[in-house]
Length: 293
Length: 155
Image (tube, rainbow over the protein chains, first blue to last red):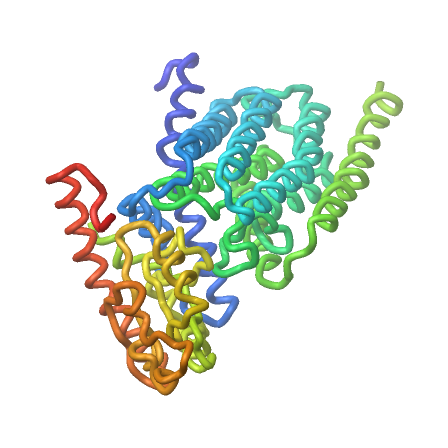
């Protein structure tokens, strides 16, 4: 057995090694299911790995060399935030590292001179502003239920968290659409080919830099679905089922809606955070403080 | 390492095509042909693309755009000229503003004839281009090993 003090480190290392594999498979399943929904056969399951392998074979074409630094920072901080999460670290610290990694992506897009890249960067910022309140509320909600910000404590608690936080959970699923870059909120860039604004925030990243961006997305997928797991942590089987259903819903929404304007994205994300999130937390606060002191 | 042949991404540019060939290019993406089966994605971005599909002839207005798009693609890259206009200028060859086929401006690797080119022949042309792409990658790696400078850069 692994000695107790080493368990978080081992978890973090397992995450760093396996998350790209799992994330890539999720991306592959995503593309396959999307193709089936559109009446197509779709690419092989391992297509995302072929894509990244190919991108590493290409020339690293950059507008300014600072882009290399920003993309690497995006990847590193995404991996760090996921590793903190899976090692049972502080949720708030995880969220800070997570936001920081996206700021690096925005800076990378601003470092080039392409107007498409700049518009993509602006939209990425708007998306960060849109989803951040709900993500923070998720952490606060989990604290109110389990009295801990530590993922290690939350995951071991026997409390059915989702029953206390139904509003927060639905709100989280809605901002998950933004985070997974799914339609209708795929403003800054889309996984679907040939959308408007060339390729938004990824326009000026080519070859190995784009590959690093993809790997960062894979880390991100695993981390975001890990948060879904936390809501159902008292029952691992139910949690896995919830993750599968949540992701399937995201693909369904992606294929049945068209992209909305940024105002609508901001409004709907904040409306959800402001109603479902605040009411859920308010009721919880009332029950804790007034009904059961 | 043959990832390049498993994931060719395409950027499509309509020179002065009548739109016949363009519709056939897009037809290759529809459920009937579904080229995504082979990992082919139609990106709108030359910086993400490996294969440059050009339809229609080159004229005085778009020669800069064709050249610029080609220059923005990272190595290794191939160009496929779709349809007879892209190959030679076609029936527009004698027009006062038309320069001729795409090869007047950028090096073309595969010519797909037809007016309009059939989706089957477009897919066949792209598959042939994959072989050339792989050969270019090998040449690029050998050059990089020999002279430690990016290959295919003629400047």
